[in-house]
Length: 276
Image (cartoon, rainbow, N blue to C red):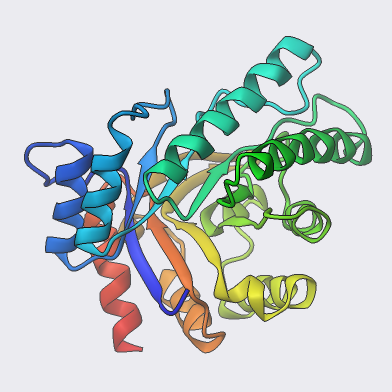
């Protein structure tokens, strides 16, 4: 990707009517460059509707990403739940691709009180199946396991980067608020943000920083990690230092605002970033 684009997690709240296509057009009218299709409850765009969404995105010059359903656990103890999880990711990737989507992100799973190495191997094997299936379908959308906000969830930075090294078409979805919450308040200085970007470049090369899919939001957290999202100015996240790090490292890709005020914070971040 040539630039760093800012966008909303879902249809902007100020869009009227609040449909996907109107949301895409409204994103462009706001001066933003990206929108995440929120499939978090269900994949809510049909195969038949996808060409219209693709056309709207292309005409508006808006990059689409996608968040697959929350009901995913590639490390479930029940085979039926793993199969259903794989199906949800595949369905999200197929629809997002038909809509001209750039990448699909998801929370990969839970440790289930198992050894992290065992969990890693299980999730890697199930992700490999997803990637191979999509390859056979000529679908090259980026598959992006997300860094997660609780210690009980699989997805620290090392795990996600290792998956990205070992599997084709897999790259990280970096959620900086999740880092911050997962570590109960750490990862909140320029140096710490820079260390994450350095790790990405070390493991994935410049290609890793040129193809980023990121989430940024304010966040409330406690000893067990993430509690809820907040607007940036209501939180302690040092988003200006984060944006400075992104600029200094010449990061390219998509920044998605997941704050309650999705377009408000997307516009705030874009404004701050452009001033740096």
